[in-house]
Image (cartoon, rainbow, N blue to C red):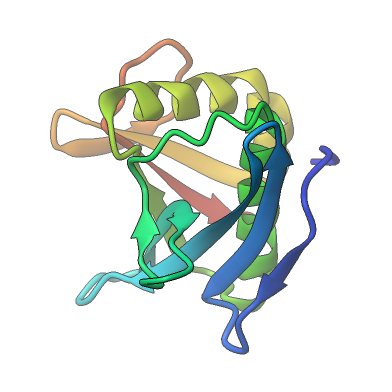
Amino acid sequence: MNLEHYQYQTSADFLEYEFESTGPKGTVIKLVRFEKIPNRIPTTYNLGFGDLDPITGMVNDLVETNNDDRDIVLATVVSTIISFTNIYKDCLIYSEGSTLSRTRLYRICITKYIDEINQDFEVWGFIDNQFVVFQPNVNYEGFLVKRKY
């Protein structure tokens, strides 16, 4: 996918990606973090994302920044997934919104770009305690992706 996104810095192990959102609310530091979920085969990582508190170093995934750059921010998260899977091949990535409305937003964005996403990734939705092949307009609880090679 070739969408406008922010430049980001990665940690040495490629598990954290930091970037700056810029807009009417000023500059806000965002962090994408991939955390290995223990005892999962195949290897699965949880994708966490939110605003980085510069004082505590904690990530807040509930705050609404409203910096008028939502699409660029989400495209940046997608770019980090591509970068991450260039290093961590054959893993699965799980993500869900911190709220129902955010999970819905993620579904809408996946639906909008599903043809492009399907060129490089397999996508499943989590519903009724199971993963199923992603279909638009289904209210999933979370999403699972795997890079195609």
